[in-house]
Length: 166
Image (cartoon, rainbow, N blue to C red; front, top):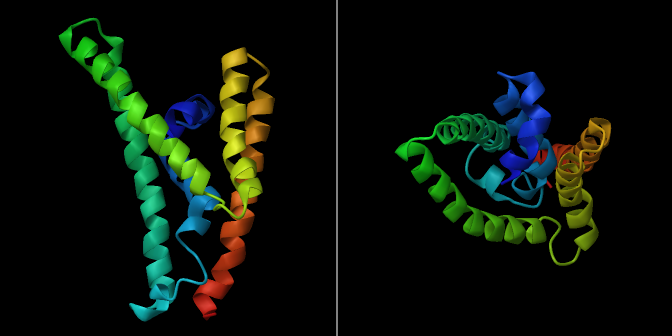
């Protein structure tokens, strides 16, 4: 779902759009996984290596998702049977994707910090509205930058504690 919102904004940096998407996800939402109070990073091996492997998952996910998005988009362009089936399956996937996205978005800041959720997930909605309404692209890029910067501050702020130990 986020890929569909971000695709128009990342289109300019092809073929690196998947990598940019993955790094953006890591910076924005990495604090959900790379949590300093999670002792498992030290309990199950070297904290630095464990954190690097979890960080790499974000980047690999971004690259794989961008590739899959482009493949499905190419299938939908045609007018044959494969195009119609792909279109129908895409529409069927929208409902669970929206539900999952809403559940994830509501858990980003936790129940005790709804401001975090609004500050980090809100820019995605703002970028979608900018694109939908045909507003100048600079507003969309600025909106996305705000979300990434807020998430990155939280993600990168917790890394020293995670790697050094509580």
